[in-house]
Image (tube, rainbow, N blue to C red; front, side):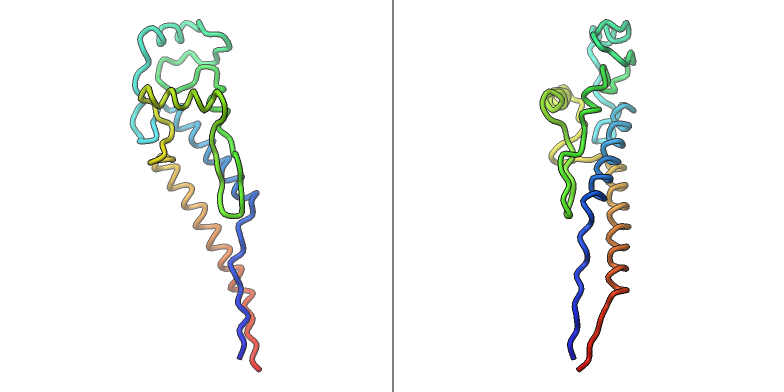
Amino acid sequence: MAKKLQTIPDIDTSWWKDLGDEISDRIRVHTQDGKSVKGTGFKQYSKEYRISKSKGKFRRQSSTSTKPDLTLTGDMLRGLQVRGATPNGVTIGWSGTNAEKVQWNADMGREITTNKKPLADGIWRFAEKRLDKKVLKNLKAVESTKTIRIG
């Protein structure tokens, strides 16, 4: 009796890219809601910065909110993008000056992400559910193609 074994198909890189784009969008919304990766509010802006921002004193300014939401021009949050996707995962992040801004904000007590906690709990649960659903779908596809040869 011979049994033909099937492997679970890899997840398509475009699926990972789409998931990375959705995670990036959720991080942007979470951040603009004024929440750190830990789920707490961001450390307050300095009084001087808060006043200047509320009066629109900065070049290319798109937000006058005095609530810490890490949005002045919007460039830093827009800079969060998929950096790579493979059949095994996705990498999202910032580059260049936007990465420096993210680090500066983290140093100031406004963490969007950390090595220890890359995603806020709600975003992590969202990603896990999407991945679980995809893996289950792939397993069902493999189940329906089993072949057993006798002889």
